[in-house]
Length: 201
Image (cartoon, rainbow, N blue to C red; front, side, top):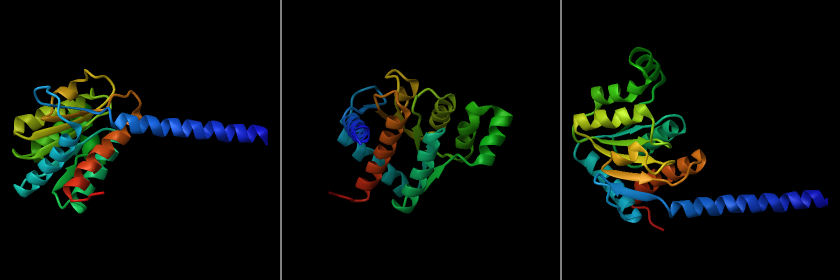
């Protein structure tokens, strides 16, 4: 009984530390604009939502890209922005498209090719990468810029990651842990949508 009790106390402390760290990390997220100038976090969240709404209102669409866990976030957000936000949104992660394009063009082009084919000037790309170094995400941003899209990036890990320098609005999570970075990215996207939809607390 003593061992079990000690284990319970230890587990509760670990969970509390995890929760405290995640809560604190949210307050450490850094946002910069395309020139590298700092943007207030609250202002950036509201701007994200405003840009998303304006993109749809002007007849354009939101495009989400990501790998792995970030791909799941991209899918989640594309459907939420579509259903809950009433905004035209797509995620370019269909399995047949990814395997075809990676086989024929290389994995670094799986999103860039789709963006070249489907994106239009005035669309908004939301590029999600925990490391900020994924070649296919960088290529996606470059393709979006050539078309004339605006870009929002979400990254983590190293502060000097290249993705962080490429968006009109760049959210950076200062952590090298995938779980913390991914949870933060998902929360940023949700917060922008929820506040844009008028949810208040």
